[in-house]
Amino acid sequence: MSSPERGTPEGALIRVARRARGLSAKEAAASVPIRLGETRWYHIEAGYEGKGKPVVAPPDTLAHMAKRVGVSPERLAEVGRSDAAEILREILRQEAETQEASAVPAEFRIGGTQMLDVARRLPREVLRQVLDETEAQERAEAPLANRQYDDDGLQKLWEIVELSEMERRMAINAIQAWRQTRDNMGESRQNHTG
View (cartoon, one colour):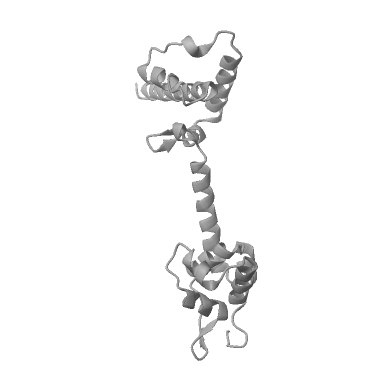
């Protein structure tokens, strides 16, 4: 499988990608989120340690190494490491979710849940209603600066000056639509049990 002369295909792939990025093994090893030393990085690239003892990277280690040097899951699979490719896909998926979540302004984070997450859970027709009402309010002649809400929570939300008018409208409409859906579901349950 590996020898001092040939190494492993995945080791060769990692080495070429690392060099293409202009990284030393020490820099690359220091910048992965797992514990991995420079010497171990070299051994994995070479496919052996000491006097030719074969070294095969565990799938999670190889996945983190590949991510660091820009190797795709597909390329890992091409060199016979589908196990590491699967882990790398998951790492990339989780990273994309984290980036998507952090792209949401803090004002849209409510009690640890983000408005977008709430919106995704709303039925499509409710979400359409929220967007339609928001657009209608935007086109309205009267400025909303004087608008008062009977509900203290909605009024406080309206008074958040860090949010744009559109953001405030969307948040209020989403809350009102969610409440209406919740109330309708409660009435529906009562009708079925009564």
